[in-house]
Length: 343
Ligand code: SF4
Image 1 (spheres, rainbow, N blue to C red):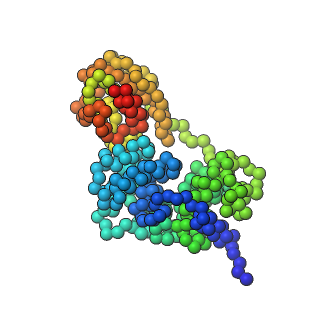
Image 2 (tube, helix red, strand yellow):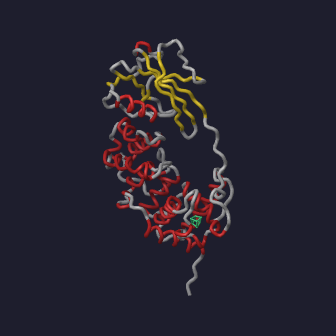
Image 3 (cartoon, rainbow, N blue to C red):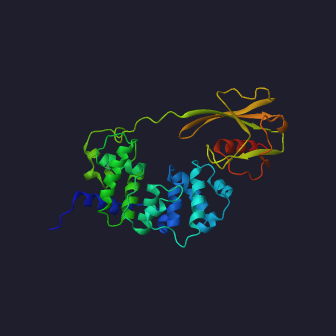
């Protein structure tokens, strides 16, 4: 008679379910390291529905590591425009340049981890899927599934809780037949079945092993997540001239928000009042844009002409209105789309 350990049943349920229920996603047809790496970077903090068109566009423009490495950073950022977290795109490009000089892409998570923008989750995803390496991926979806199956009620934002769950998944993957299917299955269950607000336990392959399912807890109770830190509030005043034929834009350095993107001349103030109160300008747009750690109140001022700009323009590049603009942060992208549609 053959006996199965609970961990073995758990792992096999995940793999079997994944093979029959996985979503049809492009990189799953040809799990080459470059395709999986690109997917993992695009879909960090991004839903599949939101990121899929970006993934396809990037792969069409840069079908190989070599093509990505030889692109200009501005080209990569332009294709990334609107996806946010631009350091992902800058690191993707930088890593492609590093890998381009090698004969083959790394085959272990330890080697991938040495590259810019590649964390433990991404490294494990690439090497478990492409090379069958037995390394566990723990993302937000996996944290939620394991917190529920094992009824872990500690704060999921704490590194000690993450370490506990990582150790559990590390032990579970030892029983997997195919580490890649196991990792993808666990993430897929989190993304499509064990949803944050309404887990669909009746179609879950882990139902019989799940402590949450047997409890009377509410989905909001497990996992427990403490309140996030308050966002830093910033006020940015951008200067624009609706009468001028050209737009002046400046490429931001990589150390602040929107690194590598282009912005209008701007000043920052402590409140909503424009720091250059002497300029002859009218407010044409104000709005708020939320980033993970910052709340950006932005104001766009229309000046008579660039001559009136309170900001020194000599370091700015000049672009013709309505023509191809470089990659912009979303607030400015929306502003230009609205302005040029009226032209
Ligand atoms: S049984 Fe329900 S709570 Fe448990 S893992 Fe499955 S979907 Fe999540």
